[in-house]
Length: 133
Image: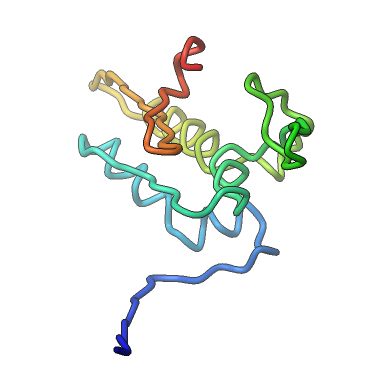
């Protein structure tokens, strides 16, 4: 039996796209504006292992370890190999823009909460907790 499935995408972006172009193309600044206005926002990266989610979100390339079965895996305690400004990912860009915008607002106080989670092999990891492993 043959099934036809249709999928809808808002955008398909090139792997050659810069981090800044991705940030602008996805209109991430609008999410930051909503957060400044008091709303919650979520950035969700989904895809297979090795497809670039971590690089897109963080902007760092990590050292790899060889395992006994020949597959490469990220180190359990990642060490960033590059920290070039043009590679800064979505999360550091959002944090910078958010704090820049709230500094310009007078007569208001802000309390900022942030979660950074990874779901891997049906387990949830809190990436802001250094004891997550």
